[in-house]
Figure 1 (cartoon, rainbow, N blue to C red):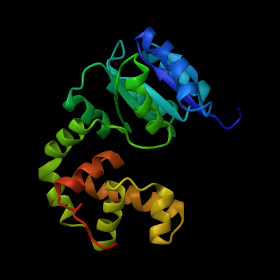
Figure 2 (figure 1 turned 60 degrees about the vertical axis):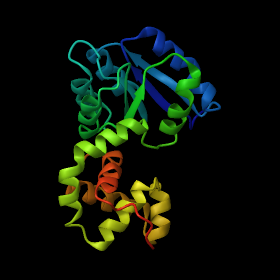
Figure 3 (figure 1 turned 90 degrees about the vertical axis):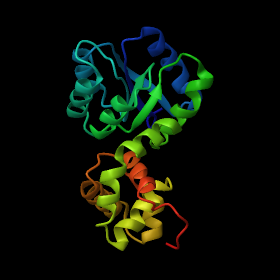
Figure 4 (figure 1 turned 30 degrees about the vertical axis):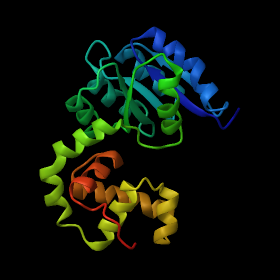
Length: 218
């Protein structure tokens, strides 16, 4: 299938990697497939550069230097790929660090298809993926700077931030604001810089901690 979503799996757990090679085509109805795998940082850099994936599932404890350094290497080798971090543990501090470094979310490592199906589908469809309790931890950790940053936003920025926090896609936001997708991406990038965050997931957490999610007319 020419238009399938290209996925790279970078993780030291071979059983998990093999499970995803089978599960990703199955849960996506053939829309996606694993096109590259790697078990360490050196392999990861070569694998994503050669396979040009759209989505990378990246272990946070990848040898020999850990997933955060690997995340930088993967972003450099495949700058357009969305990177979803993976680990067996759910250390909020580590996950938040990964989000600030450019990860699109976090998924707990498992070989149980029932646990993987929903986060995989969300990731393949372009959504930020983060377990609810980690989103709460992110909001709590970000509370002081968020309130300060949000207080300096103008009405247009606040409107955009609410749409992002409500899970609106780039296309949805373009329709609401009556602008192009390219303009939405430019405005979003500008907003993230103002908030001093690296992802839509973190921006959504900031919106919640700043009290911007109460019902309002947009």
